Length: 70
Image 1: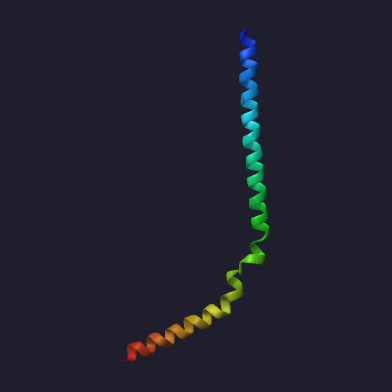
Image 2: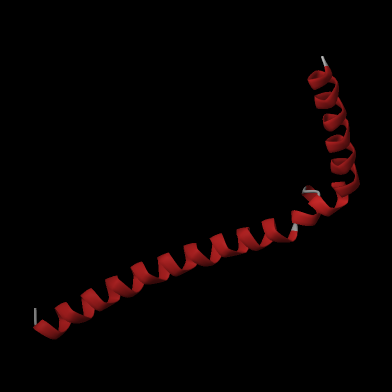
């Protein structure tokens, strides 16, 4: 076996491994993109509960005031 055949074989193996890694990364990236596009459907933004949070904080303040009075 000549040196050039060994080098070409190593380059081929390296190219196959690199192709597999790139394919895996692309598949993972597509999965992440699907998850990101589903965020508005699955999660509620904080701004949607802003009034509810204010009301809860107000109720907690009332409770603390009653506890502090006793």
